[in-house]
Length: 181
Image 1: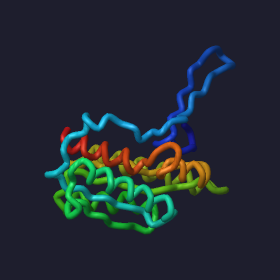
Image 2: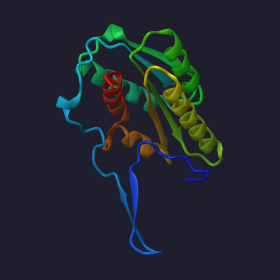
Image 3: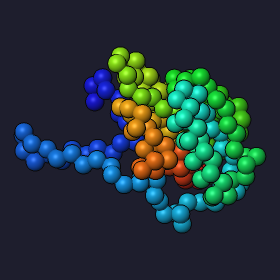
Image 4: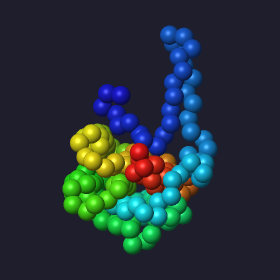
């Protein structure tokens, strides 16, 4: 994708019709819908969640969705540990510390980066994505990627409890499933 950041939330598929034409299909439904019967019981699991303080309206909604979904699947409130970091880039360090020190079954990162007028968006998105991928490749527990990378605030709101669901819910389900992997 060159210098642009791959958005974990937006599902965009390009189907080539000819050399000059293509159809783009974008997510238009609630992305947080799932089969509740395919999610294991989380009552004996411990989760670490690292949340960026930047864009608190978005990250707070992601956290609320994540915690609610973990509890819905049996996780005890005392087994859900939340720590905050100043911004999305610091999610890597926070997640790394949790993988090393706290005996979690899974770690979830939650953040929001909204495109601005400078390339800062690209650097942060690429850095966090690479850092979390590296943690997943080298850690003994899963680190679930919950970084919203959107072009504007409305896209973030749509994915933080709005019309397209809540990425926090999705991350909780992924964390439960991966902890049982």
